[in-house]
Length: 361
Image (cartoon, rainbow, N blue to C red; front, side, top):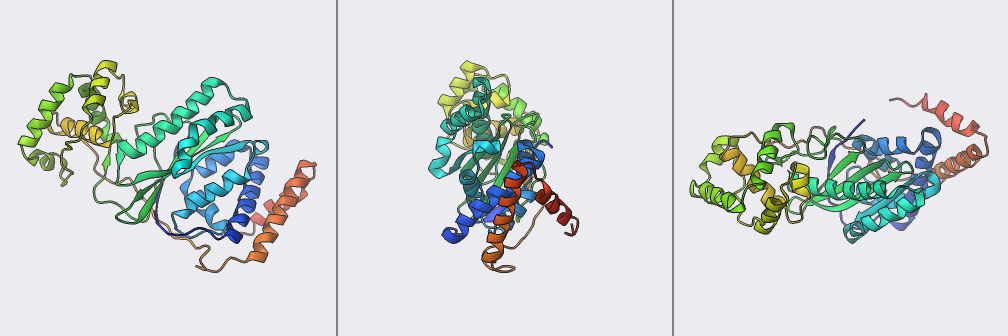
């Protein structure tokens, strides 16, 4: 497994009720502890990288079938319930909490005794994955939630969520360690309830040449790029439709020329280094892509990468209400199983495995 996908989720107002959230913290933690105990912390990462497994996990702990809160509340409960003794810690969160991710990664590094180079790599991973989903994949969803889950070995999973305020939908993005590139096909197994009609997907393999030309352009004097932009605007963008076959967004005026001058001085080696430059945002990335398409005829993907959809049940009574007594009993069974397993008695864990045979796939 290398990388996993995206889910579209409607925005639901309000908060999980305290009686439920407290139980979520306990049950989510106990489930993850069992997985870590049986298969190791890195197996936990692999499961959370799978958007289908993540959705099922969220529903097991009693959340909505497709609410945006399946991301924020589920990860919030895990962040509270897991400690370094479990071999997994989380950094980041929703809104302002996401800004604390770098310093929280440093604390994780101290807890797991990770090397300084590994900590810096984790901080870079956190930053570049957010930059890609906000800038390179332009699907209309702006990130507002970012979490990185780190195992004691220094491996990672990133789960982040973007919002489309006009359509009142959220979209979730999953990443996992071991990817070959942060900018070429970084998401697979992508799921969602809806496709967008027009998405500038510069992460697509189809857009590889456009990324290369964008880097070549960034190495040129920005005055040359400015002339190209004016040239395209003078054409009234007829060529954009001719090349792409889609009614695309207008060539942006708000290009960050200071950032392009910096790129010119840096001479980035590749696309990843280009987008890492401060100030290279969605408008500048889009302008470079348009120039590569119109002037140089390179192909760009305008297709939304969402492939699948799903609908499950949860906390609001659909398909049934949360059974509080059964919920508490589940927590108790898992807690006892873990405690006994730590003492060398794995009988209850083995019992849970045997019960799994009777559950239909």
